[in-house]
Amino acid sequence: MASALALDAVYVKLFENTPEEDALYTARAAAEKDLRLCRKVSARHVRLDFPRQTCYREVVKAVADPAICRNEEIIEYLGEEQCYITLAVATGDAALCERKTGGDYGMRNECYFRLALAKNAPGYCGKISESLQREYCLEQYAAKKKYDEKRAAGTLPVLPD
Image 1 (tube, helix red, strand yellow):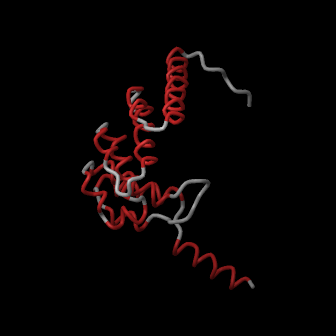
Image 2 (image 1 turned 120 degrees about the horizontal axis):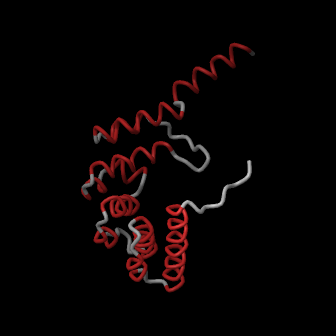
Image 3 (image 1 turned 135 degrees about the vertical axis):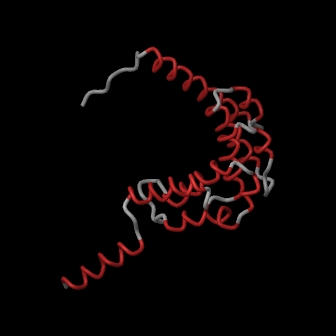
């Protein structure tokens, strides 16, 4: 039994990294703009986080070229639409929100929503085609603005231990 557990531990180590190792591979992949390094990042799911997808997103941001969104690895791990959304938010290029591959306005709307919050620009909410989503975007923008103002003023409540 002990040898089986030891073999399991070796197997896990061969195919999974520690979060620190994943973070180092991700940082190196982004710094070198090298998608291949993301293959070394764990593909496992960790509390709603997918380390390998995070790595690909960071490389997409570092490369900052829409051509990367047509790369097979990017399409497999992020999807072309999510790649454009990531780039739009990172670069502030709203034209990327109009690049959709399947006619899905949900992705376009998500892109404008994330851009509005990331760039503190509620005008992007107006580009959302669905009225309820547009209202939600404006509400979230207002809530974020209020939070940011309180944080800047140092008036956020302190949570008890």
